[in-house]
Image (cartoon, rainbow, N blue to C red):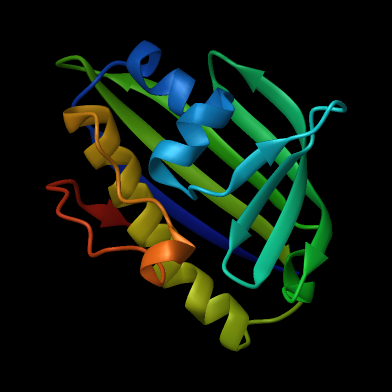
Length: 154
């Protein structure tokens, strides 16, 4: 199985970032406008016709861990695990480490997702520093180009 591993440093504290990762409104602000949470706590996120459903395995001061338990038009994500870790670093900054593990191969979906996660980490940084991210919005045919000053390193 293959994994995507990316990191970004954002000039805010982990406490500032935590709600963006642990609440539906947070997800809507930087990842996808069309995010819902059902009574069982499963997050469903729509990227146009591609829809994924995650169980929230962990949400705490260190970040989140989720497992993809459902998909529509995105079979390579089924069974993958998404971990986003927050680490405080000097000068009131946070290192965000994203690991999306369990891809069946390094195919077109995998390659597309590398770019997408780079974009969405930049959207997270923009949201954390300005209050306005660049989430996927099907009404405007997808995400607008991010204007974040953060750099994603892989």
